[in-house]
Amino acid sequence: ATVLMFMSNVLPTEPILRSIASPALRQPFAFDSRDFSTAVPSNLVQREIILRLGHDLEGVQGPPGTGKSTTIFHIIHSRLPMGATALVTCVQNKAIDSIAEKLACNIADTPFFVV
Image 1 (cartoon, rainbow, N blue to C red):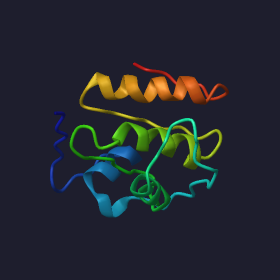
Image 2: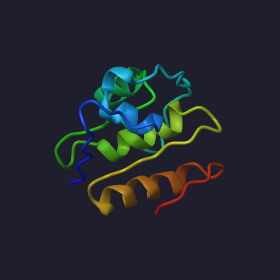
Image 3: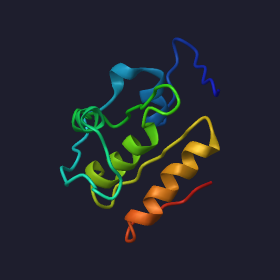
Image 4: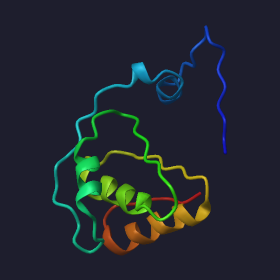
């Protein structure tokens, strides 16, 4: 696991690091409302979570096998505005590979990079 530590009285200057260090500083974000992909099935709970997104920094967490990769795919596919950028990090490469595979098969016109 990666741990980011900040001095309690000093916040980073980069907006994303400020949001991580202090969740109260997260900014509202205007997500799109495109239809969910039927090529990658999602369940009602995943769709409800995705529709409740509202900030520029969101986290998806849960035990193995609960559909986090599918949820992240649907966030990118159905809610991320066209032309917007998303940074996805995972503890295990297997999760990133799963998300990248779903994106590659279902979003031909959206560039993405796996580093």
